[in-house]
Length: 244
Image (cartoon, rainbow, N blue to C red; front, side, top):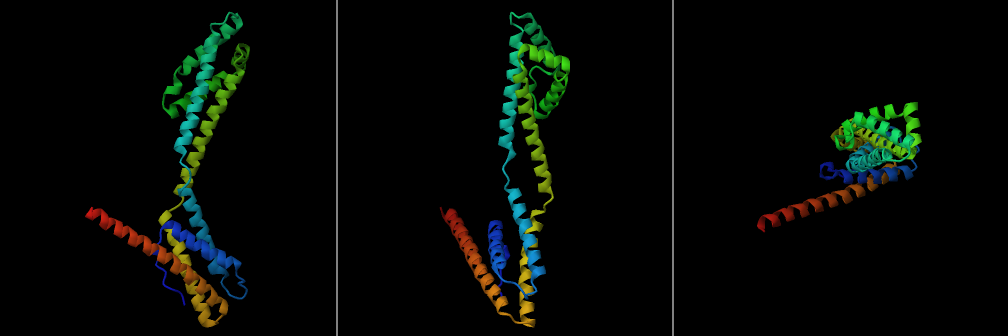
C-alpha cells in the first residue's frame, strides 16, 4: 500500500518538508470515521517538536549582537565618565566639585573598567551604578548637568545584560533537545501512521485510506528522487575532484 520510504536518504530540511506536506494534506482531509486521530496526533506532535528544534538550532547567533551592545555600553560609559571629568575644569565651583566627587567614585570602581573582560565589566558597572544611585550622588550628577549622560549609560548597560540573559535562556532551551532523537521520533511517527493506515484498511477497507496512501507515496517518490539526485551529484563531484 505504501512505498518503502528510506528516511536515511533525507537531509533534515527534506524530512521536515516531507512531514509538512503530509501534515497539510491530512488537515485538509475529512477524517470522520477513519480512526486515525491518535496516530495523526502523535505525528503532528513529533513534527511540531522537530520544527521547533530545527528553528532553535538555526536561531540567530548572539555573538555579533552582544558585540554591538557591548560597544554601545562602552561608548555611553566613556561619554558619562568624560563628561564628569570635563566638569572638573568648569569655572562653576559647584559643577567642578560635583565632577570631582563623581570622578573619584568612578576611579574606585575602575577608571578603565570598559577595557576589561565583559563579565568583569558587568560586575564593576553594577557596583558603580549602585553607589551612584544614592540620593547624594544623584544630586551631584544633577548639579553637574550629567543626568541624561548617566541615564544613557544605565540604559545601554541594561540592554547588554538583557541580551546576555536571553542568550543564556536560549542555550538552556537548546540543551533540552536531543536533536537526533527528535528527528528519529518524527521518522518513527511517520512509519507508525503509515502502518496504522495499512492495518485499518485491511480490517475495514476505505477509499480515503487509499487516497492518503496515494498522496504519501507521491511525496515519498518526490523526496527520494531529490535525495538520490543529490547523492549522485555529490558522488560525481567527488570523482571529478579526485581526477583533477
